[in-house]
Image 1 (tube, rainbow, N blue to C red):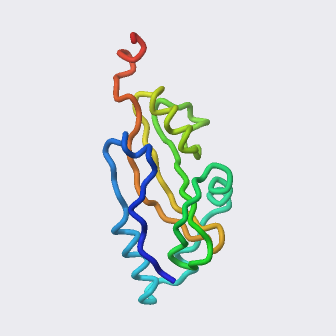
Image 2 (cartoon, rainbow, N blue to C red):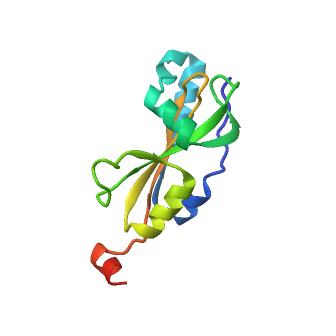
Length: 142
């Protein structure tokens, strides 16, 4: 079962800069699945770490999985930036954590991934920049 994606986005994206939306790539992948150019095995390949991150840090949606249609999708946000120590780069974050980080750090990138725990469908939805936007030296003086 292949469905169109909802246009609802997390509220934190209202503060986003440099938004890159991967909706066309997602649509193309789903069209390839329907046309038989790729199999469900090819597109339903979420790694155990992503499934775990979805369970503990993800934001559940009411949107059904576009592949299996049985389970609701979960959205997981990963953060990367020079402002983070190497040990916390690439960490999954909750929407509440993103809001706090956006007020604290000058610049970091968020990658938003959707995942279905049932069939293991996963796809990058968007990437965007969050943060105060201030240079580090100016932020320290404030």
